[in-house]
Length: 485
Image 1 (cartoon, rainbow, N blue to C red):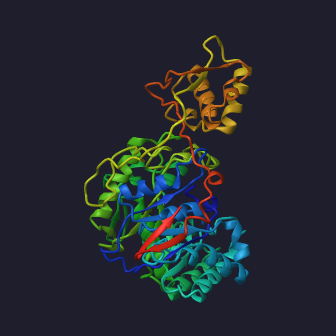
Image 2: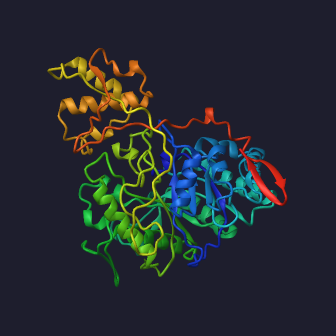
Image 3: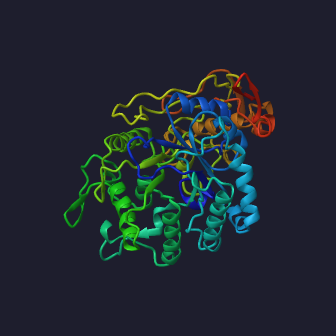
C-alpha cells in the first residue's frame, strides 16, 4: 500500500550523490510481492532489465529477491518492517541485520548497494504515535551499524514518509507556508538534521490519486499535469497541479527549519487502474504520461526549478493479496498485470517517447480452465450470495465492487467472476469449483467484453525454491566469477 502506515517497513539502500546530476538520474520502481501467485524472482529480474529499470525498492530483505538482483547493477532499496523497529533499538540487533542483509551481498558481482540505493526506514509517523518512540533510535542504530561495517559512506538510512507529516495553515493554504505538523515537528527536526549530517535524502510518498480519492471536492484536473486546473496562487507562482504544490510544501517546511537544500527523493508515486471510479487505465496512462514528460524534461518544481528529481513509481505489479482496507484500488497499482503484461505505453526511459514496455518472459499459466456459475441457477438466492461472499473472502473480487472494471455485469456475471477468482487462487483444485453445487467447470474462456476472467499463473513459492543460502556459492574459474544456483 502506498500509505506508509500500511507499508510497515524499514528501508536501506546505498548512498548516491544526491546532488541529482543528470547522469545520476534514473527512474526507479517499487517491487511488491503480496500476491497469491508470484512471478519468480528471476522473471522479475529479466522484466526489470528488459525495461531498462535501474533502481528498485523491495519491501523486505528477502533473500530470493536480492539473489535475483545480484549482478544486474540495479540499485536496490531494502525495507525493514515496522514491527522490527523496536528490535532495531538494540544495537546488536541492528548490527546483525546489517550483516545478514547488507554486507552479505556486498561483493563484486553481488547486489548493487554502492551507487544510488538508499537503505530506508519506512517507519511512518502516522501510526497514532505507536512508532515515533522507536523510529529515531532505530535510524541511528542502523546507520551506526553500517558505519561499523565500513560501508557507512556508501550506504545510508532514510525514512520514507507520507506527505501528511507536513502541511500549510488553514488560513494560508499555499506551498510557501509549508511546515511540519506540530505534533511531530520536534522529531522531524531531529530526523532531518540527522539526514543532513549523514548525507541522506528526505524520502516522501506523494499520491495525487489519494488526494482525489479522499476529498470529494478535490478538482480532478489538479491531480494531473495538463495545466488546465484552476491554479493555486502563491505570491507570483501559479500551481496548476497537486504534485508541484505538495513537493514545494515540503521544500518550504525543510527551509523553515534550516534545511531547504536537503535532497528529496519521491519514494512512491502512482495511479491505480481498477477498484474505484477514478482508478482506471485511461486516467493512469494520463497521469504517468504527464509525470514522465516532466521528469524527462527535468522540469523540477517552482521552488526547485530544473531539478532532476529521483522518483520511484508505485508499483511494478498488481498484488491481489494486499489489504483492501484503504480501498479496493489497493490491489491495482501495478504498471504491469499480475502476470507481467504492461497495461499501457510508458516512457520508462524518460527520453520523451512513450512506448509499450516489454512483457515478462516465459510465464507459466495454469491449465485453460475456468469456474462459472451453473447455468441452471435461476435466481440470486441467499445460498448464492453466501457462496459469493465465501469466494471473495479468500480471492480478489475488487473488480466487481463499486466502480470496478467488472461492476457493470449482472448478478450471474459477478457470481461467475467470484467463483473463478477463488478457483484460480486455489490452483484450480476440483473441489474449489463446487460452491454447494452452484459452480461448474469449463474449458471455454468466460471473459466478457467488459471484464477479463483471470487465468492464474503457476506461481512461485519461496518454500519450493530455497535460493537464499545457495545463490552466493561462488567459484573462480580462470578469473571468471561464476554464480552457482
